[in-house]
Length: 475
Ligand code: DUC
Ligand code: ZN
Ligand code: ZN
Image (cartoon, rainbow, N blue to C red; front, side, top):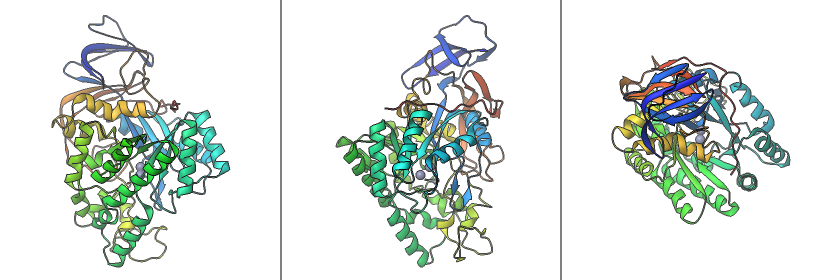
């Protein structure tokens, strides 16, 4: 199978040039002007950009969480990803504290293997630490090529770890050359503030943000930085939402701490007023850390443009509005009962499953509200949505670039497309879109995964099961 993409403008994080791309089998074999080649499939990219396949380094697809399960599987999520230009997913493998790492890895991988239409890898969640777990983690890194861990400083009693476990995890990561990705919020501050608000009768989704204010997130970041400094481990802070959190990390970097900052698309597009929408509508926008005010959003865009923030992921965590978000409805008539609510008290915002679906929309939203508004340039767009994640997580130059010998993961992007996001047309398996009615200027007209066209103009035409588990490099 051969593929020729002609007449497009190639845009990578390094360069922009008009050239053709020839791919044989799964690989890019030639890049040049006016390539005179016959091919099994030819795509005319006149008037379009050609980007490297986009990488989402932070998704949840199989997620047992807050008394329920996330709604996507690898079939729906990979279709949605490819239609939206994302060719590689890195999912958080999130075992419970009682689950063995080896079993968890096998379980998460079984959800993707033979089903996913795009490539994938995992950040191995560390939710406890002892000798047996250490041995299993070493094996997962060395045998499976899983070269990043995930820790939660929040969600005490569920995924959250204590400081001894955090120290041991970072020490092991340093030894193995593994990057530790971290959810940074102070779990005790969250628990105390939630309890206080609920006792005051503040039960609706609009109280989610005040229960996890920016100080809680900044403390989580400073906390992680101290441990990274003491161990010398490399850390990657996921879903950074606000100025104090970014500043806590950048000041540690000045001291020599090896830290990278991720933000996620909901923080760049939505704001805290969404969770204040009446009639429980705000629950659609409950995620953690919470979506902040416009002031923080403006700051995040500036820090993306100047390179302080390295990646834009999604934290895709899909839960239905009617059957799942309603577990936290304060009106007993409207609440969906849940095992997770054992006290049978009126429900409240602390029982709303945290998360917003967005794996399908990330690239188009970032292009529309970043590039077409002039907030970021095209090269930065490619860097933060693809190349930097590939470099950070041991996939570059195979992924995240357009280079001879690299995987033929390519996005032919139509900047003239105009459309509107809607639940009615999305491939993600939720009953709502957090971006309903939002205008899009541009979308992939073709997405290829290792030389095979998997999506065209909003339609999935790929092959379920074609996706591979990617072995990644250590540091
Ligand atoms: N935050 C979310 O909003 N959802 C899933 C997990 C997380 O950390
Ligand atoms: Zn998180
Ligand atoms: Zn997450």
